[in-house]
Length: 224
Ligand code: MD3
Ligand code: FE
Image (cartoon, rainbow, N blue to C red; front, side, top):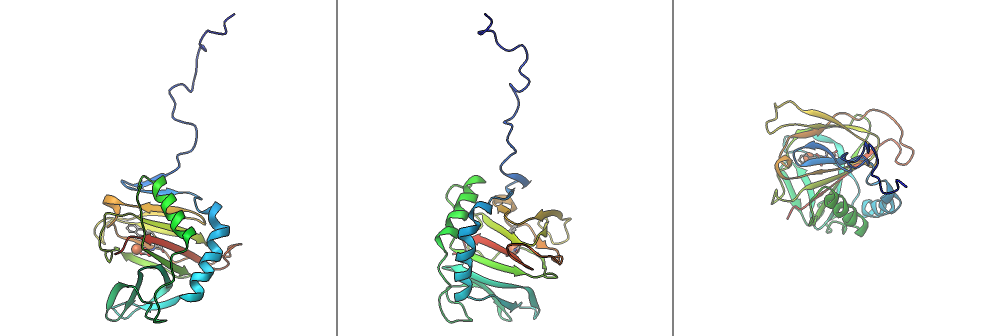
């Protein structure tokens, strides 16, 4: 009878899609993809093990003479190192004398999928820095300026213990926002946000069921 009659009141007719937004905006061109890496973990962790077997974590010394509390490794064509003479990307791991391990296919695919989800269609990273934090490790406010172009975004993957990320402004003294980053979260930083100061507060003691007493962070970059 009234099958053709439109509903009297469709509360959701003009509403936004009911799904939670995929990318949680934290800056003009930065957003968090909560849990995006979780379905990839079973492939990611064995690949991480093989990278670390070839290029073990090491604590580096900054040009100012401070030993970083975060231990680093890299994979891809370019890896990042620092010592008393400066910061740089290099093709050879100075610790092993060999090229950095190749970027595992699953790393590359995850980085591309996340960049695409955040609206960066053609992301081709040539470097993946791997940071390991243990409780108490931190990263002071800094800018990432060693890459040759700032046009490409940076994609960061957080695993293990939670961290409080500091998302600052364009001057070190600008007030920064705190963003909690949890196991499996991915952040994509691009465009105007690329040169913001950022850092990580000291990691709190804890135990993560999959990664133990550590936080691992990958950052994918187009460095060359
Ligand atoms: C925002 N790592 O490796 S990742 C770094 O959690 C670094 O280990 C932190 O800062 C970590 O250089 C943060 C997120 C990140 C990376 C680069 C950025 C955020 C950024 C560049 C510009 C703005
Ligand atoms: Fe950084």
